[in-house]
Amino acid sequence: MTKSAAIPPLLGASKSELTDWVQSQEQPAYRGGQLHQWIYQKGARSLTEITVFPKVWRSQLSDTAIGRSEIHLRSEARDGTVKYLLRMTDGQIIEAVGIPTQKRLTVCVSSQVGCAMACNFCATGKGGFTRNLASHEIIDQVLTVQEDFGQRVSNVVFMGMGEPLSNLENVLAAVRSINTDIGIGQRSITVSTVGIPGQIRKLAREKLQITLAVSLHASSQKLRSQLVPTAKGYQLEALLKDCRIYVEITGRRVTFEYILLSGINDQPEHAQELVQHLRGFQSHVNLIPYNPISEVDYQRPTGEDMQTFLQILEENHITASVRRSRGLDQDAACGQLRASQIQQQAVG
Image (cartoon, rainbow, N blue to C red; front, side, top):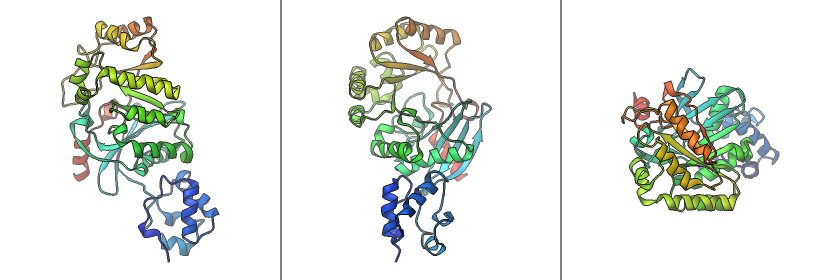
């Protein structure tokens, strides 16, 4: 008698865990390796399509979920970036983005449905928070983009919908599976956070080789509190102290994400203030020109202001670069993934 009906989705399980499961189904151990290959390399969406399994057993597994989503909507930008609206089994819709270059295919994954951080310049936060994503729902996004592009994913960034460190347990499980099961190196995985008290230190203790990206976006506590409401309870100095501890424990530098808003945080005095915070820090500053959303009236910085800001950092030996906006014309760029409109499209 099969035990399949009560088990959770198989996506996210390791080869040894899948081997244990097939043996619980009274199948030989080698089928665990076959199952692992079909899930992670062949992209099986149903156990019934795994043709190396006996037909009788496959028919018994029709109610056993691998844990794949459905593509609700796919839109491609002029630069080749593809935004996916993915429907979860409970009907919730999330976004994932495939970002191709000549040498890489990067997937921007979501970690939550919506976001509770409510950053003033971010579309996702305007729609509020619904729930955390399970680890298999995160892993699925990587496989979906990989299958659609027909090429291997090289990099994964947790910069989609949600705050990854508010869903740390499932994010860690997803990172480990993306690394060991899909085969993407930890150094090619980036986890982004706006900063959750205690969570950066907790992540550091895992001693992973991933990149930690901290969404700073301001050079002072006062300005950061205006742009990032949750910063009121997590002072800038405390955040930077936790980041220094992260560097000490992991030996990995921290990337600081800094969205440039014209006339708000992009002036020379802001750059000089940022220098004072980061001098001597093992870090990299990623400057991001603001990507417009309809809910607020911020403006993108001028090229001259961006260059001046960058030059001040570099003159003070702060490693920095400007991120090119990808997928802008399809609202797939940083800060443009929006929860509320997704749900409207889902039911429309």
